Structure formats: structure tokens, C-alpha cells
Image (cartoon, rainbow over all chains, first blue to last red):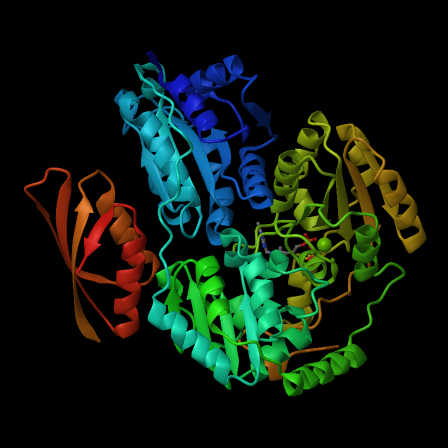
Length: 553
Length: 75
Ligand SMILES: Cc1ncc(C[n+]2csc(CCOP(=O)(O)OP(=O)(O)O)c2C)c(N)n1
Ligand SMILES: [Mg+2]
């Protein structure tokens, strides 16, 4: 049967498993919104306050579930408002499909009203993108977009649909959910080589990234670490790959990573890197990176091998499959001397940990909030000191519970991501944000209220752009250029203005009281936590530094 | 700096040239010469790119180009 392009689009989205989509209407997507209206019993659309929030919500939905997140925007400004969301998803390898309307084909290239070349604009920030010029090609293009988004190393794909393509009709036949392209499998010879290196190693160390979570290889990761008795460190993207309570887990490494995890990585004789990409924030000075170790790197993306760090054994392939095969090949081993060394480092770290200041310290905020929430709570952050404190201190036990912008470092990511994760999981969700970041997209409180979301927004309010200020203090002679905000925002009043509830707290007791109410509240709550502006994120390896440059306190 | 010659077979679709040149620009590789030809198959074009770089650049060019959806093959 022939149906319109906009009906084809919505049917294809439903067919490909999209139960919720996020977006914002406008002139060039009116037909799509009309189809959504008529099919609203089969697909839910969530309108946000801003397209950026919708893009981050689709991203949060995808990170929380592993499904492809969908966002829809109109042409011109609607489409350009997606760019930060796409770039955020691109750098963190999040599967997303963005749908944009565009002016009719006859008006393309004439600088028509709200015409932008969104395909051209988003080439560098998408895995791939399409412009559909024929209604007959629409369904298959959307299917292809889903396929690309979720295959191999996931990423965002944009499909631009001129209005005439939405209006014209074509045949539509539903098809099943498209399978991803076959995952490349690691070569047997390389798997054997990896098993040999592991057998020879006295001080093995597993370094994991977000690739473990994308591949669903969490169980294999734990199994390998137990079988070869290796400690596990992670990048910020890999935090939920292995539970914090797992005895082999040391924690996050990198610029603000935990000392033991970073030092052990430095001292290991073998670093088994799984689905991580050695970003500069994670490695520090690459010339000094893991000098005493051989490095194995397993990644589904061949371009990541030897890109930032030259490795001894690069293996391209599905990390889940590769791990299962390595586990089958290696003998069980114990490394008591290595663990003794690690425990000494742990003890040293404990003794030298920096004390935090103020009546309510950032760690107290995170630990107190954490104590009220079950393990499967989705946790989102914005970007800055509060993000690092959360990564360091919050106890993550379940995969896909941490929504944070690791690669792009997008302030303003948190509200949208928390909304997306909350809607996707139906679970009470917490956002740790900063007073600066929250200011970027707090308009999405309106969305959280209209969607009646059980969302707890914890503002670590230091009155400053803390992360930038910390660098100014350390490297720019305390020239606090434009980082002291001097705002007078009354967050509880702001919450009320949006139709939400809000509290201001400055002690642990007050925070406990606020949390007790927050976990019973049906809708969103803002908890404004006053913390000291001079609090720093420690430890810290200065940019371009190595473990010996790590500032502990 | 060695001379690097890449022969690509790509989908003949508008925008393909932009994707490829954008990739080179973004990764900091300079294209010294570039030719695009039709092939017997109207869906497919051939491209010859000449650039200069070391082994690292060469490997990255091959692997990054290999990820482009519109690139069918490279040699
Ligand atoms: C969109 C965007 N603009 C600027 C930055 C640079 N930046 C990184 S952290 C930071 C400060 C964040 O302040 P706040 O949200 O209050 O967090 P805090 O560090 O104080 O916890 C800034 C400006 C960024 N990461 N993203
Ligand atoms: Mg702040």
C-alpha cells in the first residue's frame, strides 16, 4: 500500500524498535509531527525545551539501554541545535539516529527560509549521514541509519528529509529490526599471542573503556580479571564495565583518576587494553605512558590501534568474542607479589589522600546522595569538578548507570541525558551538576516537570566554574578570569517556578533531610548544595604529565 | 615524508568528495593531488589520492578512510 513519506518514517522508526523519540516541531517537520500524532498510541514523542536537550535525551536513552536513541528536529536552527548533541554522542560512541526536516528539494540550494546544509555541517560529528531525495528510498535509508548507528563501534547517524519527500507517497512494507553488520572477529594467531603474553606476565593489568559496555562484555571482563588475577582500571567511559565492589577493580585512571589505578598501570608489565582509545585525558604524556609494560590493545575500530599509543599487540575485533577466546586459552594464575605491591600503593594512597574542605564537602554530597539510591539508579553528570568527584566517589555497581560526557566534555549535557535515561528506564534518576553547567540547559526542568519525572538534580554549587578556576589557580597565577559567577540564583525558587520542588542545603544533616523527601517525591527535585569554591579535584596529573607528576594533596 | 598513493573505489553519490576531503583536513593530512573517474558501473567512482606522510599517516589514512560508509574499497 502507498503511504506518505512521513508515515513511512514513523512506521520505520516503530518497526526498528523506537518506543520513545525526543524532539521539537517546526515548519519542515509538520508532516512528521502529524504522523506522530496519528500513531501516538504506538510511539511516544517527548518534547523538550530545546533541541540540544532532545539530542542529549536521545543519547541518555541510548546509554541507559543500549538501544538506538532517536531525536527529531526541524530544518535550520532546529537542525543546528542538534550539533553539540551529535558531537557528544560521536566522541563517546553512542548509537543515535537524528531525523531532520529540510526545505523541499525544489528550494534546496537557494538559501531558502530555514535552509541549512545540515548534512555538510554534521559530517565530522556523525558516523554517517544521509539526505533522502526520494520517498521510495526513505524506509531503507532509515533502516540503514539504524544499522550503521548500532554496528561495530556505535555512533550517531543523521537523516535529512526534505519536506516534499515527507509529503509524497511510496510503497511501504514493514521489515524486522535490522541486524547490525557482522562484528569483525579477532585473528586466531593474535588471540594466541595475547594468551602467551598473559602467561608470561608477572604483573598483568586490565585497562577497560566504554567498548566493554557497547559490546556487552562485562561478564567476560570480570572472568578474565579473576582467572589471571589481574587488577582492573578503567577510563571514565569504562567505569560501569565492572562493579566498584569487585575485588579486582582499582578504579578510574587518567588526569583525575585514582592514584592506585594509575600507579599500578604505570608499574605493570602487561597492560591489556579493552575497548578504550587512549585519549589524552586518559594517558597524559604518551611518551611516558606505561613505559615498563607491553601493551595489548583490543578494539573493534581498527583506526584506534596505534593511533594515540603505539602498542605491542593490536587486535581488531569484537572484544566480547576476543575475551571469551582468550579466557579459554589462558591458564588460571595467581600474582601474589603483584597484589602485595598494589596493596602497598593502596595504603600509601589512603595515607596521602587530600582532605576536602568546607562544612559540606563534595565527597559528602555524593556519598550521602548515593546512600539513598539503589544500585540500578541512572546517574548523569554535567562537566567540571562535580563530574570528576562523581566519577571518583559514586559507587557504580551496574553497567549503563553512568551518563557522562567523557570525550567532548559537554557542559549542559546532564539535564537532557538524565531525562532520557529516566524515561528509558522508568527509574528514579539523579543528576550531579554544577552551578555553571546547570545554567546551560536548566530550561529542561520544564520537560522533567511536564513528563512528571522522578529526577533528583543535585547542584554542587561552588559559585564558580570550578574546573577552570582550578587550572587558573594551578597554572595561571590565580588569575580568576571570568570564573567567579557572582550569581544570585535562588534554586528552590527556580524549582518552584518550573513547578518542581527545591531545597538549599549546606550541611550533611540538611542534605539527609532533603534526600529523604526527594526519594519520595513523584516529580523532579532540585537540591542546591553549598560547597567551598576552593575545593579541588585531586589527585591530578597535570596536562602532558605522567604518574610521577601526580598531585595528591 | 614518503609519497602515499591511495586508490579508492567509492559510491557515486553527491557529497562523497566532501566526506573524503573533510576527513583529510580534520586529521591534518594534506592532499597533493586528487583524481576522480567514472567506472563502467554508474553507482561506483574511482579516486586516486596522492599525499605525503610517514607510516603513521599512511596507516591512519587507510584505516580512517576504511570507516567511511561510502568507501567501498581501498588499495
Ligand atoms: C559547553 C562548554 N563550555 C565550556 C566548557 C569548559 N569548561 C569545562 S569545566 C567548566 C566549568 C564548569 O563549571 P560548573 O558546571 O559550575 O562545574 P564545577 O567545575 O564548578 O563543578 C568549563 C567552563 C565546557 N566543558 N563545555
Ligand atoms: Mg561550579
